[in-house]
Length: 160
Image 1 (cartoon, rainbow, N blue to C red):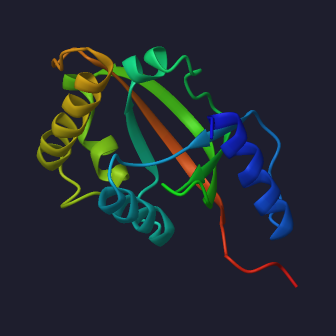
Image 2: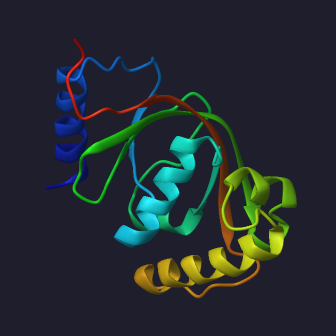
């Protein structure tokens, strides 16, 4: 299934469940590059610990996707394409990897929330992303730092 099909399927499921989608450009989003990392990150978001994300700008270019913008509404799907969350982007900043702040690292809510932890784990993740798209990780690689708010945590049973 292509991303457009996944988005349409997710929207149909959300409609069936009675989930309202706020106004804004609709995008499809997911977290992590393994089922384990995906679950960890989704649970951090659902618990309220994670209110920010970082992604490799080069991946948007390689996948011919638009970068996120404030006001965008993301349907966050799991690796099976099922919707888990509806989020809305509040702010976006494009920075070199080496300039991501300790404040942003803390908002991502991962590990001990330190910049050292963020740099270690994101270097590993971005290195895998770079290899996937034919780039080489560097301290200057462009990182999309986004803050978001959770609009809906998707329940698997229809609204009554």
